[in-house]
Length: 224
Length: 224
DNA sequence: CAGGAAAACTGTACGGTGTACAGTACAACC
DNA sequence: GGTTGTACTGTACACCGTACAGTTTTCCTG
Image 1 (tube, helix red, strand yellow):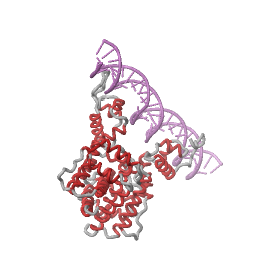
Image 2: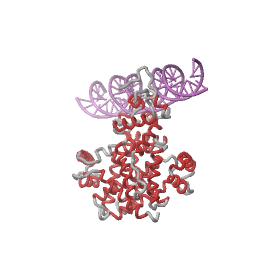
Image 3: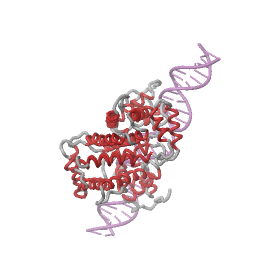
Image 4: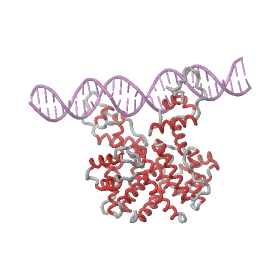
């Protein structure tokens, strides 16, 4: 609706990068949904099929979008202590997945890693290897850390309320618990005594779990 | 194609449970994709719109499918040691997500937990609470364990080769590394010295990470 | 047993999706 | 200045979820 190509040609208006940036912006705005090819094209002032000159198919476009998310993640700097480096990049990765929640649902079906993704993993591996982790130890560490970060992002995305806190949740918990009554006593307990407490925010759990993992890595660093 | 309703009515052929079982079976068979309403209906000898008498919309059907996956997970038994209970249910959950890989991609958008899901979480919480974890400690533990299991399942699902091992991967790693050349030295190192070793299977990482987490929980059990 | 209401199905249709295929117009090069 | 390749457009297809309006069949009630 914005700027139609009218009858003129729109040659030169498109490029891989411009398409990806627009797609990410639209997905962010839409909350959790990747735009359709037609909507994306319209935003770019172009017809849907024009996209297929820059991407083999939609899946390749999704690959590119996910790679853009990885490109946003802060990587550990060369001289940095492994523990601080891991904490920073885990937090940065989580933040990126919170900014782009649509990426979480895409990750399980992405087969081709982009170059930003490869650079990301290479940097993380390097930080560990340079600080005394063996090859196997670094592999264990990355599998564990990535699983934790992705899984935490899934759970935050699935939360029906804002994980930063607020009292939207009290009514929700109350509703669930009313339905489930006393059939699930431990769930009721945790809802009442933990999640409904004033200062509660699920997002705070991230650092707690991450610290446990980093402690365990520290302890195993030499033996792995 | 199998048994069309011809001209007669197909009354009584449907029920929530039958629909869900068929949907899960079809999704499993298809690998990673949930069936369309039409395909699902055809398999049940019914027309697509008949499904909407048992489910408000497709999302509610997906909720039910995910709940069925949770129902398959073995729960810790009442008298069981927390550590053994957690290990068993984590392994069982991972196995269920491997059997039903389509569920992994659904989890980030499920807002309404089914009763099997609630029972699942209640049982896990109970196992921890009965063995000395505080309410907060149990909350930390569950957040961490669930994140790890879901995240690991994501990574297994995203793997372009079978995580149980095999040499499909050598060619793949070779291909990637040929493209990436020496731009990613640490990635190259881990590919050659770790992932391409004869006995390697990514799935083995699961137990290693899980043990680290359980150790950390043990250490924090009293102080949390 | 009659009749009417509720429940479980069918038929059709609408707007949306990804994308195959065949133009068409412009840019660049011999 | 013609040829060739590239980047776009137009049209069309099969498929998707589902709204809405029948059509049966069953079951409850008088």
